[in-house]
Length: 485
Image 1 (cartoon, helix red, strand yellow):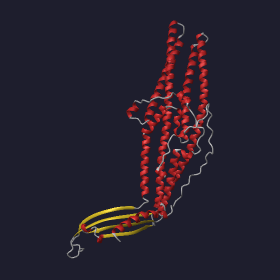
Image 2 (image 1 turned 180 degrees about the horizontal axis):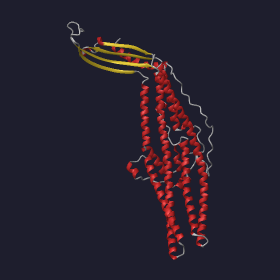
Image 3 (image 1 turned 60 degrees about the vertical axis):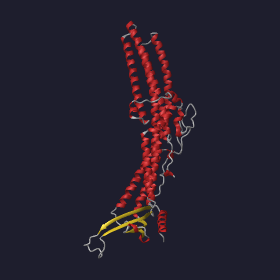
Image 4 (image 1 turned 90 degrees about the horizontal axis):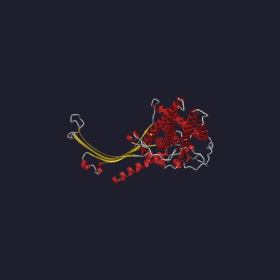
């Protein structure tokens, strides 16, 4: 057989060896999704004054019709470091999966070596008159392949692909959490803006009342009690304004971090404002129905299930170590003591071999590996069940909070209207001498508290609706992975 034919034979044998792995069976349990008792239908969403809209769950934030909110979310996706970290973990998992899959194919190596050595003339190893200095040159092509009769390599590949899918889903989890956190912080920012404006308006009113009371006190029209009450209310308004500004500053820095801005930009955050809290609340819509495929949508459930898939495959990989391993080798090359004769036909060498190893005694080492793999599978199953439980609780709590906030808003709105009338009447009574200034201050205080509570109710209602979208797996783009192909 010619040299070229032998080389081609080695390469062909190396490639066809890969097909041998399909001849075996994969030991260990095949993955089956755990059967859990889940609700067949969801609790109906709370009714709204306007009909629920068919909101796109993957771009729910656009329903608020606020270009600033849209641009902030785009900026966060481009720069947030948690997403950068998640992307890096995906690339690491993809590289690991590629490396693991490569073990299922033959290994082909080209070799080239040369050495020179001298043998002792007094050792009795040389023939009479032989040269004690020898040279050896080799060039060759070697191939080896482990036949995967028991599915050890297939299970390892299955586990690595599942972990890649888990990392890709984890990026979806990070992105979904980012969208939710940024939207809720943005709503809080606009609510604190409204609180600050309300406090400034109240402070202006209280300071005007204080100046009026000071003039009346100087004229002897009111007593010292009314003056001190006016001073107290003005100071209380200053406190409310300072607290609103403090909350604003803290929320701006939190948003700057979520947006992935530089340390200097975080130290002096500048967040563009869009729609007011009232305008955002007017655009609040709920999906007409909730998706029934919650288990297939939520990134954290995908992460947990793929972790269980990987743990299940690890059990099979561990059990395969009980069975014999078969490795095939083949090679072709040239060897000569003179470099010029290295490619001479007489220098040709080749080999074909097989190696079988059956574990006989390992002092329980393989059993320990299997037990550890089964223990990790038990842990992964518990984590999966807990994640599913948490998912349904999230949906339940989000629906409950949305319904409660809707009722609180309606009652709070009625309370504000009633307190405005109360303040108007108390002011008339005071001006006509039928009541003390304390009654006016009490009405002002109650109205301010109710208006501040109404603003916070709007923020909480918006936040609860965002929680619904997050609970059903909205707000992230499902990745397309090589591992899924």
